[in-house]
Length: 37
Image (cartoon, rainbow, N blue to C red):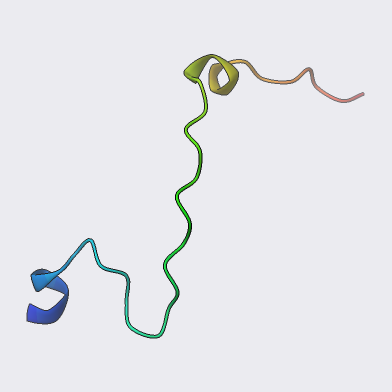
């Protein structure tokens, strides 16, 4: 427990760090595509 508490931002051992995803505008996130028929 102390290990994860020491570096919570660090990824778990044996797992590659995921790449930083690009931040998308809140507008595109708020807008939803039309329901498919």
